[in-house]
Image 1 (spheres, rainbow over the protein chains, first blue to last red):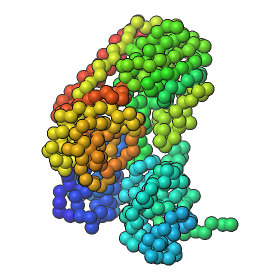
Image 2 (cartoon, one colour):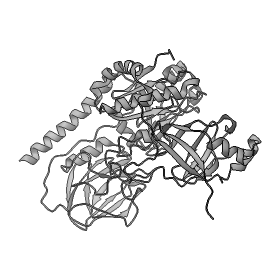
Image 3 (cartoon, chains in turn cyan, yellow):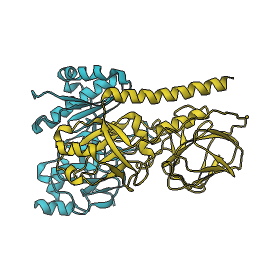
Image 4 (cartoon, rainbow over the protein chains, first blue to last red):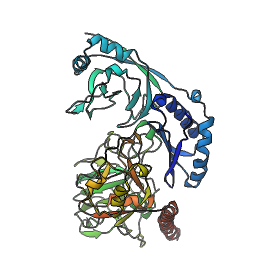
Length: 217
Length: 313
């Protein structure tokens, strides 16, 4: 990873720290450093928001007068930051593998239902970043044997708690939303509750695993 | 209390927005025309962040159930307090049972009603703003409907204020910061973007303003990027070549190239454009963007000073 990060001024009070040109092989390692960088910046209390994307971090400053200072400091911080400095939380998600598209996904890959469940539930996933709707995690770690092209016809409404696969990603829907991914399972876990002291279950950098459970009669 | 007789196209409770949660996917929300919002609040001696009503295009009717003072700003939607015409940029005492009725207008899209003491509702994640997508904040997370009743604290003291605020002119040329993906787009595309006249697509809303134009073929592309953070003011260029200017309710990340970012001083203009209005874009330097913001801020400070002097007497 010898390539230099790209730091761009977006506006008079925001910067884009971009390392998305780094090798695809190192997506997770790069992202871990970004979480640590974000954590460092957060602790300075100089930012309104720090928003990770896929191998990038956008920094929204409280005071526009510090723009150049931060632009000039970030590369050095990037070199110094230790990706293990970031503390993440691990979540076990009780998962009912009974989704409407479970059979489709199994047939598509010529796997049995149990093999799909096993491939999906044996991995540890990383929350790379959130977006789309509050609490929606973009996850890293889907086994390539489960990569499935998105549905030809997106559903108008995917129920809250649906766990789905779309292309090389898997995710959980925090609320009823339209979606073109294949629903393979459901969870009762609450991903977003605006009235809770911690409104979102996941934050960038957290890890999770899907734990298969059977629904009681 | 204020009773909603008719909400019009979209009537919501907004403050200046919800910040600090974008990394969790939570949008800013808040008044689209933050400038009009602040002026309306200052005219009734509120805090800048107090919650106001944002109404869209007009045809809205409210009944006051108690005495208060109101100020309007933003679009002139031909409002009447009972039979008396009321204008943006001024404050008016209101008596219980009076009705505020908006017709429509030609001068913009969104009007702001500030009420003395602010609209009262619970704060959700640090803000009273209605987030229509996540269904949180404001009045039960939704736009107001007929017969809804919103809370205000009565203000019964006499109110005399002969000071008003000007409505800033509508701009036809929107100033932008250069986007981070300039080098990925062709020079022909950037050139077309700077020379084309865009019209506001009717499918525009609080999430974003969609722009139509005749040069979309030149601006088409097949770039696919890693998702990155976006914010109100980000100008996305989807593969079809029709730009989208993101506004307050937009999601927090996106994968389309960013061709630019509307400067802070011009962003409020997008609250007021109407379908078929036409605009062009001009890239400016950071210094020009800061100067434009300072000019707006100076205007706001001047208003504050002048009103403070008035109230001190």
